Structures are given as structure tokens and as C-alpha cells.
Image 1 (cartoon, rainbow, N blue to C red):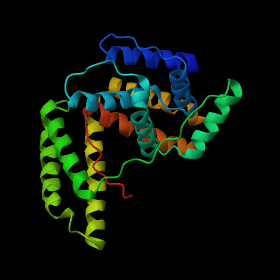
Image 2: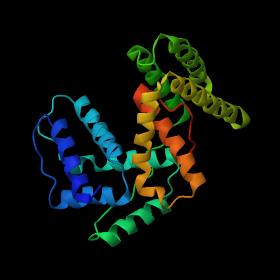
Image 3: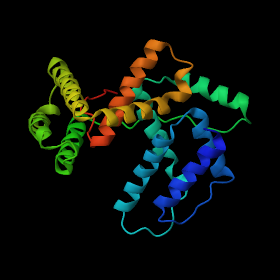
Image 4: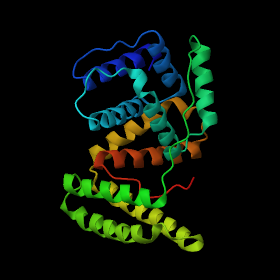
Length: 247
């Protein structure tokens, strides 16, 4: 996707989020969004960052005026940073992609993704339990998945009571258990997908990684594609990341 097309897609998405009120992406705003495209921020990831800003905006009460894209910058870059870490795209791959884009087009300004805001282990567990409850209520996975969600939620609920006081090997054992539960949840969610849905997610994963594929070894790309699929499965079924990444 050319940078101008990318900016138009973001502008259209922002218009929908603003209930049809058009805020043009021109001037400094165009430079900002062009920078996202140059870094290789997938369009869907940029839209997810915009969604995150709007969710926070709605929580403050009735909206008073349309949102400009500049207000969403921190959330978009944070979502991109989370996406990179989830699929295994390194900062050097981002830099290489950006240099390649800039060599073909006029150089654009861009800002690097900020370091993600870290959560304590108890905060992480609280957030995961809440999102698991939401996933169960949505019933997007079907009734046969409820038993697994209930078991995982109960186990995590019990872990919350002691997580803040765990140290050393006991804390590491809990973190290892979270990774195992995360893998189990994803494996079961993938089984729910039919052939058409799995193929659609695979195409989306390839699209997200398209800008980085030429600079990745085949093995690295295969790992990144699987990780991108996992992220898309989570998104489809509104599942949290149970695994805990230590700062």
C-alpha cells in the first residue's frame, strides 16, 4: 500500500469513529501518519490504536468535539510496539523497512514506538480475569469452550490472592504456568476455527507482515506468521494474553 493510500484509509477510519465528522489528514497530521506507514505499522494495528484512544475518550463521558488523529499517536505507537513484540519483528527490521520506503519515496518524519507500559503481576492477573469473563459472556467460542474458560479463570483468580507476595522460584513457577495456560487457550481457540476462517486469518497475517517479509529469514518469518495468527485469533475471540512478560 502506498503512503497516500494508507493515509486515506486512516482518514476514512477516523471519520467513522467520529460519527461521520471528517477530520482531514493533511500537513503535520499527514507527516505523522506517513511516519506510521514508513515504519510498517499495519493498517489494522493503527486502527486498533485509534480504537484504544476512543475507548478511553468514551470513558470520560459524552464527547465534546471530534478527535484528531494526532491525539491517537501514543496509542497507535504503543499498539505497534505490542504487535512487534507479539510477532517477533525486531526494531532493526523496522529500521530496514523504513529505510527502504524512504529510498523509494520522499523521506517522512516518524517517531519510534515507545516502550510499553509495564503492569505488575497482580494487575496483569486482574486484567486477564476480567477479559476472560467478557469472552465467556460474548459466547463467541461456543458453549463447549466455557468449561476451559471457567477453569482458567478460577485458577487465575486463586493466583491473584498470592501473586503480590510471591518471590523467586515461586513467582517464576506462576509465570511459567501462565504461559502454559495461554498456549492451551490458544490451541483450543484454533480448533474452533473452520477452514474458511483459518484461511482468512492466515491472509490477514501475511498482509500484516508483508512489509517485513523480504528482510526476514524463512524460519523467522514462519515464527512471526504463527505469532501473528495467534494475535488474530485472540482478537477474533476477544481473548486476553495470559502469559506475563516481565519488564
